[in-house]
Length: 463
Image (cartoon, rainbow, N blue to C red; front, side, top):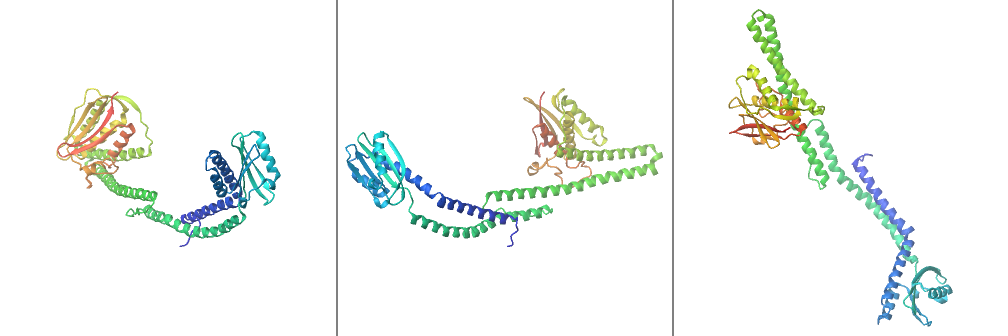
């Protein structure tokens, strides 16, 4: 496979190799440059532990055995000097320890420590016999006995050389393995991402039947695949609804325009002298213009909602008057005269909200109820008082299936997919209602049953 300079697989490969080289560099740094310092630190700490152990076991009946064990296993020279100048010695000279006759300075250190009355002291000296550095440690055991320990603090040269030689081979092996393993790891990680990207590229061209692979072992990739899968499904649904909207709107726009032109020509050429026919034709033109206005306003309002450019103008008003005003608007239109509007509101319902937008909500809910009335042409509007809220209900005699209720507020959605001329609207009315109520942060919903019809409701706080 050809690797691109800035491709994901190349980047991951390079980063993993850099990581491996960094680890090796750190290993070399500590192994070669700081090994002596670290060894000295470990030996110093070891001397503290030895001195503590000897002090704790000083009066133990097996003290001799304990000293032999410590001297041999820990590689130190141990001396216990008394005020009467008696010396108790455990030496392991093979480890590079130092004796008094090797370095008179050590003897002076011992004498000075005894006279100083200090509890403990440590310092470094050079063994003149082996030319190695020695760590010397002194501790006061009691008023008559003093402990002196010394040990080499230089690592064995041959051991260091072996470690460094071994490190060269380890470095070569690790580098080779890093190149190989890094390549396969980068390929393993990048391959599913490349697949997801290719599928997303297909989706960007408007092909929504693409499938995103979600069977990876990496959780984040599975989540990304699921997210893109859901996005693809939503885009497919939106595209389908968009096509349906275009079909519906084009039909609803073309028909009234055709009728307006036809009736205008009829008035001009035929009925301009007949007052009754002329007025009838003019009323038809006015109705079609109202239909166009309704469609255009729906589209404009929804565009504003989507762009979030609408700001709410809160005022106190009587919701009862608003509802009656909307009902009267429908009653004033001849085509709605045969609908029975049953309103059970109170005399005064004082609330605080954007009056214009709440009026639009009620108008859209009534319009939707009228458009989808089925068994009888009766629309109920209820206002129910609940604690500190009013619940407004708009009920018609239609039925919406349970599986469709969750989509009813979506833009462009219609429960009746077969467009009808007498069903006015773009499919945006309820989506506009939803946006307005959510801007107000009002609760809303819909219920439907064959027995009680469909009930659209929202709640508004009392003032």
